[in-house]
Length: 257
Image (cartoon, rainbow, N blue to C red; front, side, top):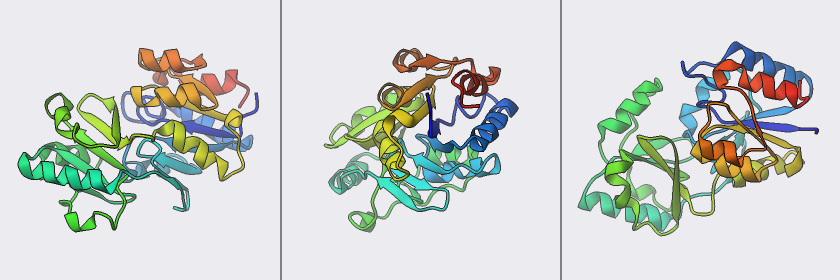
């Protein structure tokens, strides 16, 4: 098999349990780059929460917000799929009736739908300032690519009136809400096409529920040994735990390095 592009999830895939990149992973990335592969990040994180990865490695691009907002390392946008503005308008109407913690993510900027400690604390954990409040005058002028619904066990029912969305997650305290036709399995091939790369030339790594469609439908899917059962079932190959040189072992076994 010959892979021209490799996409990696972040948490539990590129980063270990200590939230750092294992040395073997960094070594594998450098070797894969030397061998000519393009290396990308595919994550549910909002764009500002991906920037720190540049301190580890010069990735060729990012499929952020579950593949809804894809851009190369120079910031050129390659693919987007925004949430219907009418759903954002409805979200803000629901917030008036009964506020609940929800982040509104545009391409590079994030806003809180209502003041919420859950949002502030999440951004502080990522060494980012708390986002400002969303101004409804932005609706229709600035596209929204993802919502982050906090404490979903309490508030999940509050977004049910939205008409054209679906949600997934990587952590239990937050749901990622995206366009009903979106996902990493859509954004990744669209992004790769800009480089003339076919689906069968793509290798993807993931571990969580929001990686299942990607692992099943995009190129050749590798699930981490620490991944959830659904991710492992969807993958073509299961490698070792992220903290047991999982990425290095898979790339070695698959002949990438």
